Length: 193
Image (cartoon, rainbow, N blue to C red):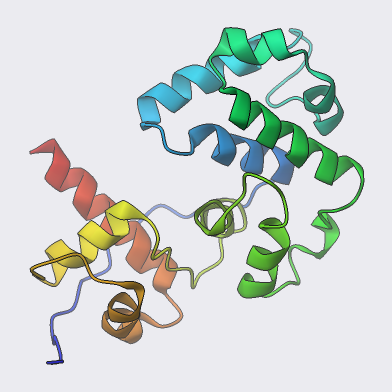
C-alpha cells in the first residue's frame, strides 16, 4: 500500500465543555442515534417538554425509569429507544455505570464499561468521550462523516476501513479529537454547497 503524504490542517475550534450530567449526555446520544440532527432535536424537545415544568433540563434517571410509555410515544421516541433509555436509567440507579470512575478510566476501559448498557455501542461511547468528557484522542472510525471526511481530505477513491484511517491519522496521535472535529466541519461545509 502506498503511503499517502497528505495531511489536514486542524481547524481552530471552540473548546468543548465537559458535562455536569453524564446521564443527560448519554440519554441525548441515544435519542440522536440514526436520526438527522433536525429530527432528533424535535423528538428530544417533545420528550423533555412531556415532563413536569419544574424539571429543568433533563429528567433524572428515576423519572425516566418510571416514565409511562405514552410519554415516549407522544414525543416520537421509538419503542426500542424507550427501552434503551430505561436501561440507561436503570444502570445509573443500580450503580451498573460507575460514574465516579469515568474521569479516571482510560478511553478503552470506559468504552467497554458503557457498551454494557443496552443501546450504547462504540459510536455512542465515542461521542460521549468527545463531547461529554472532552477526551483529546478519540477517533470514531465507525462514524460515516468521519469515513467520508478521510475519503475527501486524503482524496481516496473509496471509504477507508478502520486500519487505513488509523494509518492516515498517525501524525495526529494525541489530537484525534481535533482531527475528528475538523473532518466533521469539513464535511458540513461540503454538504452546504
